Image (cartoon, rainbow, N blue to C red):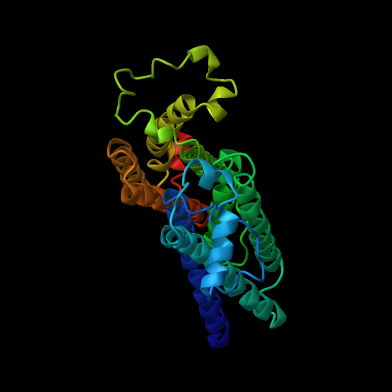
Length: 348
């Protein structure tokens, strides 16, 4: 029994360390985006990019490559090499952290599986996470590549895919962490768990639209709240076009969708809490969900009215991780505490 507990503790430390590293990586990735640093390294360099430039000649080579892309030619023309070094370091740190994270996840996973401390559906689940990590590496380069040829920025679709995949990986690791001492990671589908899963999907959808908002610089258009300048719905938005591709590509429509998704998530959370979870004695996780939701809404509003202050924008991105973590904890709690449901409520 003691040996089993020690194994659980080792796996817990590993999953906890991995999840923290991933949160740091997402945070640095957000700052890389906010500081306009993401296109500073113009080649993938899976192995050759492990070491930073160590000579002045190497710095010049990287800078000359950067000068060939549209971002330099149309936005940063005339940038000094010292200014280039600043944006380079953000992207370099982001890539190095990604490498460290994959090794931190991969090596212990292989060890635990070899020692048969992880097996069955748990090993399948975690190897799938590893596959997502490798996919994410490709997705990161696929995103960067979109800003190197003709555009001065990366595709907002690829940016959203890169961010949402990172959130999905984090969510799966966090789920494994919460379920570390359980027999398996499976979800018992019922009304309670389905309602929480829908909430998680809505939050993920909102994160995707947040990436669209960032990728299209849509937050620069209307920096007032609750109105979009002088109107609740901006005057350049045609309601009949809301269900068209405009909501994916037009900055005004994207910002509107981001706002209304936030309102809907608040509404949905309140409705399912009072209509189901409060009555069924499964209300504990909602203390965390409502705190995280309130914090995220406040950060979103402050980010907007501050003119997209970089620090507030960074905290707003991290708030999305806190919010989805609280929802995943809600799923975990609901999944393993079905015995708390007061069935007399449903007999009335």
